[in-house]
Length: 119
Image 1 (cartoon, rainbow, N blue to C red):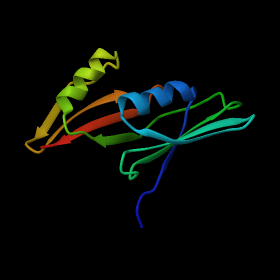
Image 2 (tube, rainbow, N blue to C red):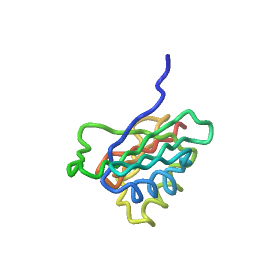
Image 3 (cartoon, helix red, strand yellow):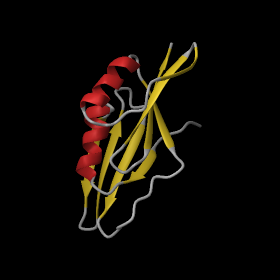
Image 4 (cartoon, rainbow, N blue to C red):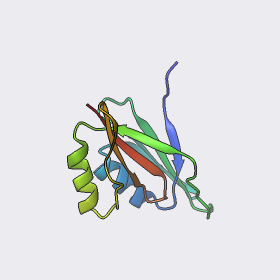
């Protein structure tokens, strides 16, 4: 058994798609739409990391508390600079031990997103 997919309810599908597609680097696999909801399925290039973004039109409250999603990156410094340039207000790069470097940003709904480089 392995972890397959994470579903995130979002306030604005287009803003969330822009973040996860353009900043995180996931690709859109599929989009579905009805009168009540819109869904987008995203994955990394290998298809191992899959996220489902869902916007429910009648849902007025979306909370992102107590959860952090971590993505591994090959170049934490370049991604941190990109986060600064895009106004994402990243945390400082942290280096708690010789093998890990990481920083945090928030997605459009306030969910904590970590980017980690294993050295």
